[in-house]
Image (cartoon, rainbow, N blue to C red):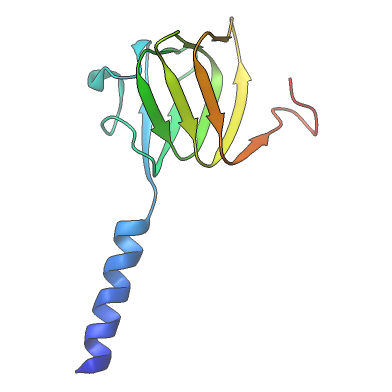
Length: 116
């Protein structure tokens, strides 16, 4: 019985601790829930973007991994984005940081071993 309880607890921790994912589509604010495929990102959410998207970070925001694929991002003066995991970007357009970007993880080069 003791081992069964231990196994159930371990399975619960694996499921709860697993990173979620959400994809941003279109152009708009990070805080607009309808732009996200799986709700607003949290600290354990892996974020991706759809081709040509533009994200405006207009408030305090956080995610695990952030992958901008042929997209762009603006962090407004009132915005703050914390990336806890890997930040990788193959971007188009202009990327602006007028607020705060906190990178707690790693920066992944977009092509080869060079950061573009």
